[in-house]
Image (tube, rainbow, N blue to C red; front, side):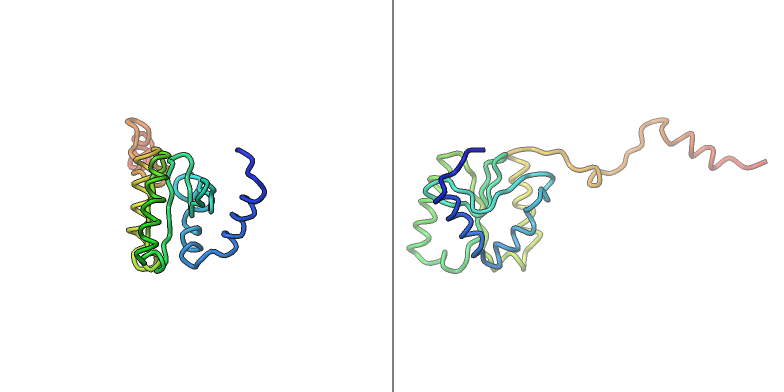
Length: 149
């Protein structure tokens, strides 16, 4: 990993310390590889911006927006920021913080689909149905079913 300038690191840490409830909730979903091993970073610097939640493998940025992002001035700034990031190859997903609690599954599904589109991971074993291999369990089943003498 590239070494960041001390000022950049300090600013990112400061932003992490002052996170909103929406960012805390989102981080509880994304931290520790909870999306099938995808690694996210909080307040990742892509200067001149700091990305709320960034997955390097999928080049995906997840933003949690509060009400201030609805102001016309901030909407223009967000559009410019998103265009800059898209030019860098980074896909941006934006969610209103008010939506996180009401539509958890919708938000998580949107993140999951985007991650899978951009950097496919196989589903964990517990998500796929168990299909027996021919002959694997059949002999055991026959032994169990055969009448005892």
